[in-house]
View 1 (cartoon, rainbow, N blue to C red):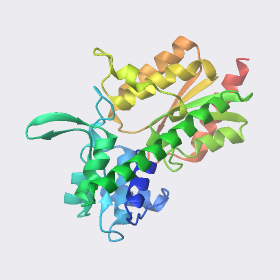
View 2 (view 1 turned 60 degrees about the vertical axis):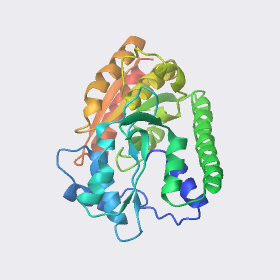
View 3 (view 1 turned 30 degrees about the vertical axis):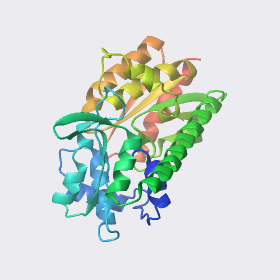
View 4 (view 1 turned 180 degrees about the vertical axis):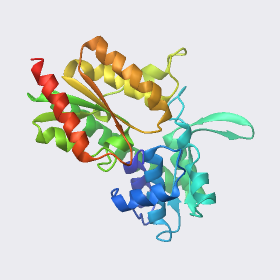
Length: 294
């Protein structure tokens, strides 16, 4: 889930019990593969498995509808439908809220994270005064977490090991089942993995440009963080999953930026049939090639 600390803190501060489906397991993955639409991407299949794991264990499964994160940005289309999908196809009781933009009386308006939290609190029947205090705590928790990621990045770029930037989406980078534990592989091979979601990103500046070339907000974040980090790393590994539509064009932009900076680049396409042994072999070969350049 995007912003897990934000949402978890919000519900807990409201006095609600939060039930988690836990870390991804092969059992959860198999459940998603058996029940999700074949044409969807692997992360969505895994998401279906997690929702099914929570069925009958709680009153509602919280599934936020991410329309956009930033002004002028748009989210992945596959992030719009999950609340409807879970409720109507899998008969799972869903609690949801729109993050980004939604229609009210036919007028398109902006609904940022703070406004989404307030809307959600009212939907849960909470007092406005209580909601305001809880929203403040939830957002400060998320801000502190993001500050910790930035501090981690500035520490890692000082490492004397080969620094390898792992480029992917946050929901892949932070799920060891999806990413095959590639960060641990790099550490075992005496390299320093740097996750792209730790790289600073000045989104206000990027999305304020009226003619910015990319409207997909996750794509903008990925490209801007890549440009920021390239001068501090020795190589780039991009992790993408089969059937990811946005990544089908993003990989070309990422590779082009790496070529311009003359930094070694490798793409790893993962699916439900990928094996850790095969991924490790490719990572070892990439590091060998990178080290021969010295």
